[in-house]
Image: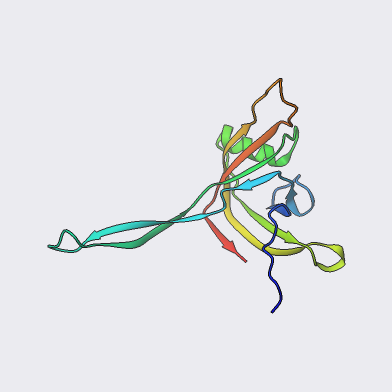
Length: 153
């Protein structure tokens, strides 16, 4: 049996489908992605007449918001899309693909280890990192995105 090594988390790409003005195939670069997850709600049902018995049953599930961080880009189609949603309340839902990459693809291209396709994505929040005169950091913009559902491959 071959040895298994978990994939690294630093090699990934994000594709914004149908967003004009973004890189090739809608690709945009990010420093960090967080919030990729799903939660189940639990419903508690008491058994009739017996107070000590409770049944916990799975209920609906919900997705957490995706948080993307990158160096501040002054003029970008992605930032305009986020600002239109957050400031003007003008939403154009997009399909976003997050791909975890690894070595071993064809013609020196990375191989997609796993991917998440996020449907009906829309911006919830935009934030800029703190300005600090005693630090030598890059200005980081943070975008928070909500979505309807997710497919994993």
